Structures are given as C-alpha cells and as structure tokens.
Length: 198
Image (cartoon, rainbow, N blue to C red):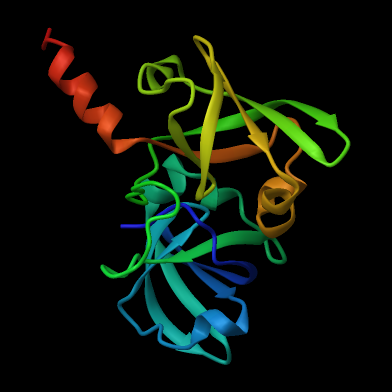
C-alpha cells in the first residue's frame, strides 16, 4: 500500500530483456537506499514492483508482459526519470490517499494550461474509468496522489502546484505523453455494489 506522495525521482540506468519481460535497473535518490531490502515493494510511476536486486546504488525490478502492456513502463528508455515511493509503514501519516500500486489503465496528456508557475493538466482516459471519479475526489497519475478538478465523460483535469511540478515527473509531461492511472479503491467498491451483473 502507498500514499501517492512521491519520495523521489529515479533514473533508468538499464533495460534488460528477460524473455517476455524486462529488468528495470533504476538509480533512486541516495536517501531512499537506506532501509530498502530485496523483496520490498516500490511504486515506480505508480506501479507496484518488487526489488529483486540491489547493487552500486541501484535497484533492479522485473516487469512481466502484463505489466508492460497495461502501464507506461514499457515506454521507458535509458535516462528517463520515474517517480518512486516505498511502501507505506503502518505507523506513518497518510498524507495522500490509499494507493494500491495496481494500474487500471493508461491515459494521455490532452491539454496543459499554464498560469505563471501553476498548471492545470487535462488527461484523456477510457470512459470506463471516469465512472470511478468525482470532482474533489482522488486520482493517482504516474504515482502522484492528486485531487480531481473537473471530470467529463472521457477526460479529467487536475491543478498542479509548483512544488508538485518540481519534485515529480509531471512537470516534464507534454501533450500526448502516456501516464499510469489508478482510481480510488473506494470508488471501485462502490461501483461494484451499484452495477448489477449483466
């Protein structure tokens, strides 16, 4: 379980093909290395992955075909920057919202509206996801916990403060970029209860 509060940004060092999957070698910020062990869960662009090796200030993760096809991790290249968050300790403050690290789908940046240092960003998404969104509710975009502003049939907007633009990869996103999306788990349960099986 995660909060959607990005701890730091890592840099992709290598991408190694392993059969149908890929090994991601990522260098996290030095302060994130301490206390992280093999087997720990880390959200990479919001996708929960397991640390399978540690070496030379780097973490190794393995992403299988399902993960690569349903997330933007398959788009990564050497040198790309990713958002990182380690799993939530049970005694920590919950500053964002409950995030599972299970990506529902990819969306794309549809529009960027800039006013000084502030940005409103619109994302095009599958219409099936907006049923699980509500204005002032929560959404996770590339691992970042955000508050929904407007929700339409196939798109939504968020307001990004200068701090978020600086400390996450969202500040470098451009129109057309694919992003990982995870809707609020509470909304999923509500929809399940309300929608009758066909």
